[in-house]
Length: 596
Image 1 (tube, rainbow, N blue to C red):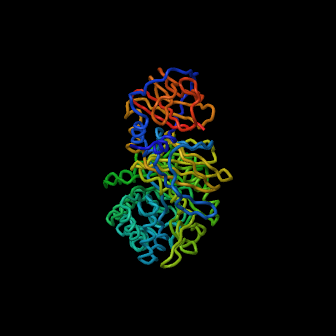
Image 2 (tube, rainbow, N blue to C red):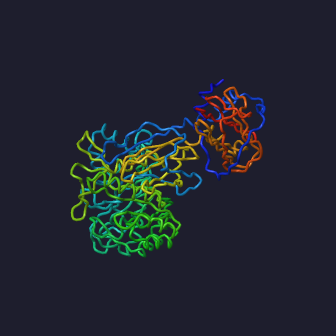
Image 3 (cartoon, one colour):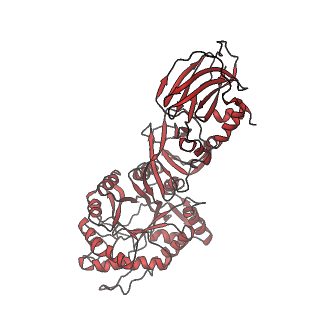
C-alpha cells in the first residue's frame, strides 16, 4: 500500500481547469460515513495508479543564447506539474494548421565542393551531425541548384553546346555535379532516405535565352518545350543515381536579373511554361515531382497568386525575405488555398545576436506561423574565405551554416544553430498547433510530431531575462530564458495513463481541486467538467470524515467554498495534513492541504 507522503507528492500538483466560478456558503452538518467504506489510505493507492506518469512527464530543452555561451546546449529537464507565473505560453492541440515538411539549407555546388574536401572520417562526422535524425540535428529538406548558382566556382548548365542542342542530345550531369554534388547527395540519402530535395535553376542553358547569356535575359518562347525536357532529363538522371527530386521551382528569383547566373520571368511567362510545357512533360513522363511557383521575395504577392490561381499543375509558391513582410505568405495562402514554402534566407554578417534575432523571429517562427511547410536557410557550407562564389554577381558575404576549415576540421555557424533549434524538436510531417502567449515579445511556434512527441520553440524578445510557464491541458512548467535567446522544448505526448483520466475514456466527471496551506481558514475550489451529484468532504489521515462541505448536485464549472478549520461539531481541528476529498459519479479524487 502506498504511503500518504507518496500520495501527497502526486496530488499536490493536480491542476485546476479554467472553468466558470460559482460560490456557495457552507454550514456544518452531521458527520458522514466514509463514502463507499473505503479508507483514504486505500484511495491514495487508487489515485496514484491513475496519475503518476502525468506528473513525471519530463521535458527536454535546448538553448542558444546571443552571447554564444550556450549553443544548442542541453538544459536540465523540466517536469509538467503546476506553476503560477503570470507570463504564459499556452498550447491548444485542438487547433491545427499546416503539416510541416521540415527544415534545412541549400546544398549549393560550392557547399558540395568544400564538404568533398574533408577527409572521409570528417565528412561522415559532419554529414551525420547534419542529417541523422537520431544523433544529428535532423535536417529533412535540402534545396539544390538545378545547374549552377552564384555560390560555386563557375557558371554552367547540363547542356552547354555552342549553337544550341534543341533535342538535348548532349545533356549530362558530368562536371561539377557529378564530381561533387551527386556523390555528397548519395551519402545524405544513405543517412536520411526520406530527405526531401527541392531543385531550383538559376538559369537555363545560355543558348535557350533571349540574350545568349547566363546573366539576365529570359527564356526564349521557342525553347519552352526543350526546357521542360531539360527538367525531365534532370529528374530522371538524379533518380538513376538514387536521388529523388521531391519538388522543383521553374526559376530562382524570377524578378532578379542581376545574379550570375540569373534569368527573369513574368508571372504570365511562368504560368504559360508550367501549363503548356512543364506540367504536361511531367505527366507524360510519369513524374510526380511537385511544381512550386515564384521562389522570390515577400514584396510581391501578385506574381505567386497569379500563377497558383491559373495553373492546376502548381502545388504552391515559395518565398524569400530579402524584401517585404513575412505576412505575405498568409496573403498568398489565403488567396490561393495552395501550399506556401520558405526556401531561402542568407546569414550575411558575423553579427550573431542580430542574425539570430532576425532569423528565429521573422524567418523561422514568422514563416511557420504564416502557413509555411518548409523553412530553408541559404548556403550550407563555405570555406574560410566565404567561397566559392561566382564573379560579377555572386554573393561574397553569404555565410554558410558550416565553415570547412581544413581537411579534418569544420565549425558550425549562426544558421546551423538557427535551423537546429527547430529541426531538433519539430520533425517531418509534424502538424503545427495553436499557441497563445500573454507577452507578444515571446514569439513561439509549436507542433505535434508523427510519433506523438510535442515540440515548442520560444524566442525571448522582451529586452530582459524572462520567466514564463508553458501550459498544456492545465499542466505547466516554468522556464527562465535570457533575452535574445531561443529555447526548444520536447516532450512525449499524452501517455496511456493520462488518456485514462480524460472524460471520454472514464465516461465520468473529472474533478479538480485547488486549496492552499492555512492557519485559520482556506478557500477550496472544486472544478467539474460537467454537472454531477458531488460530495466534498474533509478527511483526516486515517480516512475519517472531519467535515462535510458539499453534498448535492453541482453545475459544470468551478465552485469555491471556505473551510474554517473546524470539524462537524464546530471544534477547531489540530494542525496537520488533511485531505479535500471529492466524489463525483464514479470518480474519487483527494488532495492534501496543510493546517498550520
